[in-house]
Image (cartoon, rainbow, N blue to C red; front, side, top):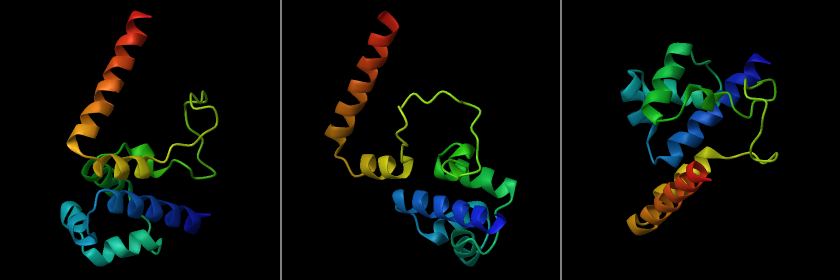
Length: 122
């Protein structure tokens, strides 16, 4: 199970790194390791310590729980699924959003703001 978990963490790291268009070298520099170490993390050869997970989460702008999501043995503290069984792929959404034009991003953000206002007013 440990090796499966290491591969899972590595896969999540790789997906997020690629979604942001970052190189292994950039990520390595940000957390003060070699790019070879990032390669080992991504392949699941080496486990990632809790300190490194926290550093990676901060640098990659994701919550720490991002790395645990979708792992079969992970049970979230939130048992209510507001998305009716659909799993969100945050890496895909982040990559898609970053590829949009500024106008498209502004329109999406406006829709989200309007939705928030509607929820507050009922």
